[in-house]
Image (cartoon, rainbow, N blue to C red; front, side):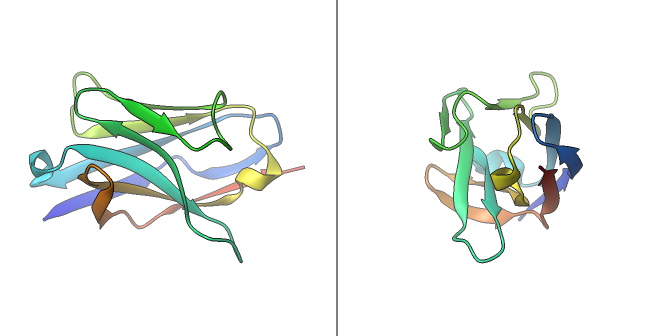
Length: 117
């Protein structure tokens, strides 16, 4: 089993920045991909960004150039999502996920991000 705990959500004005963190514990090294999903009220869940153990990244078109996903080089079980130039449409609950390639078996509890206009 893998446990994921997110932090760093909050309220920010449009154009501002937030950094989300996710700390993994348990049998974490059984996974090879981590990422972030988000879900806004009334909308489909969206895969925002992913990063593999070898550092390859991929982003949703809606966040390219504004969000950056990274893993802590020292603490391999920690992942970040740096969110810049935030827009009201980025408002959602953000979930840390972990798994293999495009299958995510493990989910965090979610952290709320609210961007005011």
